[in-house]
Image (tube, rainbow, N blue to C red):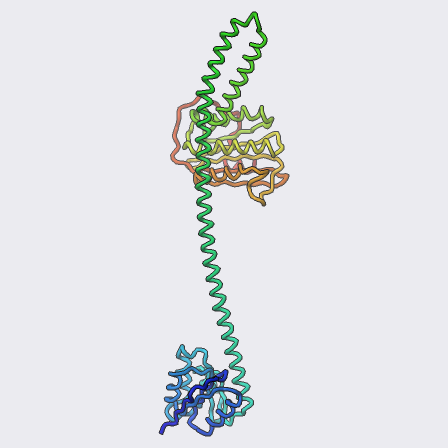
Length: 412
């Protein structure tokens, strides 16, 4: 006759459950009475087979397991329980009716037992040990839930960051595309204005010149001074439009390349700003580069020198241009007041530095600013080159200057 007993569940379940496995009915009854007094729900099994049947249907929180069972060694059952992932949170206390030696304890603990008790069991000690294990279990469960919540939050934040990064990347790409189109539009508009100034305004000025030539013959005796004043104004206007046309799209850059265009620009920059340009260059004479690279390098120098004249407070500025087989480097160096970059590259409401940086990046180049308040500014732009094209001598000589290598520029 089997002694296997499984109590039907009640409507109000005690907080904790214990499975008692022992072939001694008196011991099982005594332990059950003690535990039920402490509001434990007790399940009972008198053999290893019955214990396995209970565990197949339910999962208690604690197992009180007798070492000597009629059908199996309790330590083997303990090892089976601890080897099953379903019971990884289950505490097992081995109980022995004999005095337990050190080796026996070690064997039981090595098989997975959480504790070893000997009969007769002291009720207060038993309850204290069970409560201790339950506190450990509850702490482990709380930690597990906290970890799960943390993992969920991490996943949520990771997804939020992924979406935010995606939006930021998309916005950056859109901004870069917009900036590229803006720079292209700017250059196209400059070419258009230069063309109109050269063709339409130039033709109108030519007509006015011929008209003055004709009027001058008639008015030489009647009103010579107004005609002379008009001719002087026409000359100034012609020079102004010619300079404006060259500034918008220097013919030097189109026809002769970077170095002649820069020299032409410096010749006009110094008289108007009183800032002298120390121009140093190496391996760029007689070479033409991609049109976009030449334009970007020229505009970088132009914008930097404009900033120097407006903000640096210096009388001298150095421009260094160097070219290797696959790189064109441009540096603009001044010993002026410098500026604070902590708020970004724009300063005094101007976005010129940002525009320069983006122009360089559009050509897959690199761009850097080294500056400090009161210690000057060094701006470096580097452009990757395709195979350089040789051109015939253009008749323009470089400025008298010592040729420097890139390593020399750092000490400048």
